[in-house]
Image (cartoon, rainbow, N blue to C red; front, top):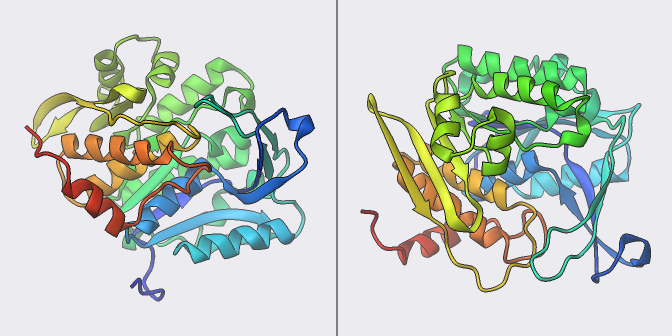
Length: 327
């Protein structure tokens, strides 16, 4: 059981939104009933790590409205430490509506987040964060896309974490529609990724951000700029790892796990991040971390919802117990 009096050992930040998922397949304009939940790549990872027993602190803003109160209650029920979650009296909580896709297709999503409470995050929101007590910071490319002040917060968090020797992971999580230009997106996210220890792009994201084609070359791009390890998501094919381990550069391609029926692909990359980060914090090898990332990502796509498939520590232990030893 987690001790609520202790400061968080893992820090995450970004925008949590109230999510409404269609109860039945069909176009958004035809849907009459939705099921409520929460959404946000950053919260997916935070929840996944909390379910594995880590003390996770969540920094964000929500509106002084029913959706904001629902998000706070839900995150606290998931075990997140919300001491850094602020209620903004002047701006509303962001909303997202998602269709129910069939056959494993990516569902269509519509956002109502412009000017949201979270988009007004700034470095001032992080003044009370205790980086000295933290082990790890997870960041994505979504907050810096929301606003100038969110971009400043992201840089502030990464720089303060680095100054304290806190390990950092960075998932680009591209949202091109939120950026003024593709050039601005590439330059900003590549600069942020260079400050992190572990970079976790998808293959298509890596190609867009670096202009390079192969996983090996994409990984080299970030390693040359300061990252210690790169884990590339390859979809059903698994993941590619390249990095520096005990002074020596290593690389490996780790096969994915077959899934009989893909229900919802949203959140698969966040599941992968949960697997990689938790394994590395558990002291496992990069190859084992990539395999755990593949394993949790495969769990995530088999259920409806962004984070519903993320396992508890007990469930993960049972899943890993049946895996063969790594070569």
